Amino acid sequence: MHQKISTGPKRDLYIYYLKGRLKTESGMFQNNFIGNWEEEDDSFLFFSSPALRQIQSLLNRQRQLSYVDSYEMSYDQWLGEVFSTFEHGKFHITPIWDCGEDETAEDKIRILLDPGLVIANIHYDVMRHLVNTEGFVDKKRFILSGLLRSEAKDIADSLAQHPVKIIKQWARDGIWHTFYGQMEQDGSYNSQ
Image (tube, rainbow, N blue to C red; front, side):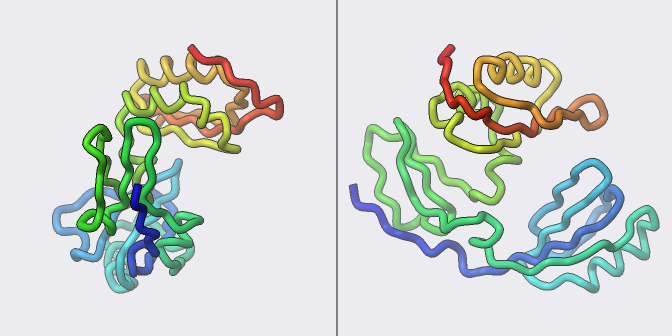
């Protein structure tokens, strides 16, 4: 298989850390807005270019928010590694910046993704499959998020089959459940 080594997207991320939860408004940000990650009472707003004026305007409109800090980093720094095309089982995973140059074998399922968003956007059926693979227990820590109550119960049952320790579990508005955990030292794997 021919595999192109990618250097990743040629862009920086501008991240603004705010205390409080954002209230959605129409036309809230310009087109450099990438997304918002909320964790408990903190909001992290991601932009593809500096957005301090937009943040200042937001803080003037939404008084429940307060500025904590801002960060500028490359996309690779955010990911913690350089991400490139790879295959796993029947899947051929390609980062969005390599989409035009990719050669996928006919027997593979091509998945085009933005690895910086994969945790937030993973489908429950894929997550359920992933936690039941041997590769899952090779990871030191994990975050599984965006689960409805019944899905969270199923994932908890699957996690009970692995040598994991749930460090924290929470639910936003009683609907969206999140698990943060780590693998235990014995590293044994129990397939379901």
